[in-house]
Length: 320
Image 1 (cartoon, one colour):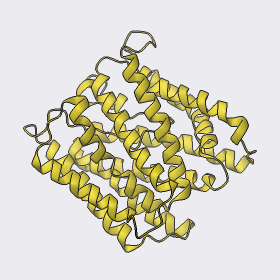
Image 2 (cartoon, one colour):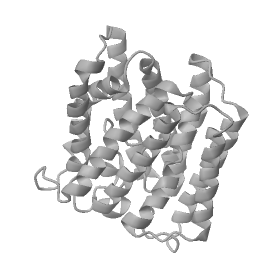
Image 3 (cartoon, one colour):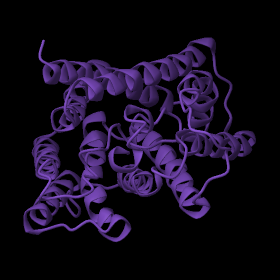
Image 4 (spheres, one colour):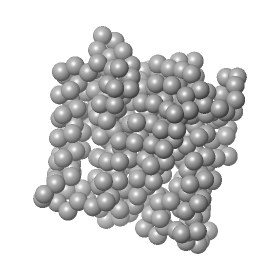
């Protein structure tokens, strides 16, 4: 099998597993606050994530080289995680994914002030078209917008910020530092909120949380393998396959059927994101390639950060 084909198939499998992870988030979100789901996701996921952190053989300690950037990234990850889990809990799956897929647009915009990326006319046009797709999904003035829509936008924006910061400081910071701080922050902050939001969970629901952690770990390993097997320009767009799983799971489990406007908006957002990836693949177009090298999904501070381990010798250029 050709290496790019292998990479694409591995990525498709990984994002199918990620979609299953999100189904469990939505199912549990009907009964529990997102703070509780995030807390237990970190608690059950940490032993598995530790296996990945052990791989960081770079010498040093756990003190960040760039404390302020690390703090901003940690806060963005925590806010993004809670927002994403809340959005999955309250919005239809397909609509949530459609909004979250705006993350590459935000990455492109944030790369200008933070990375010094030069965005020329064609990528600006792609960003504008993509944002138009977001507006079609949201349909302000004609559809009822709720806090779930805002949460999805916040999750996309915070995830983009966290990704860009890793691109900026990844060459200086140990992978374990960039991975550990958001998880610890989530554990401590969500733990402090537990007395106010905790609801007792039956074994079935606790098992769902364990399954989420295991699925996230397996999917992360598969994405790493996908990027090692294939080119980023081939593997990166595979994340958009999650919208197909969202439609399938939404209809099968939650009786959700995306309306035509959501479908049109999602197609526009995905097309603009893929175009940006293709443009960045041209070395004369982008020096940093921030979107193409975003090797995982939204940043939640609960999952292993794939890009920190996919290419450990080039974190500065091929990071998040």
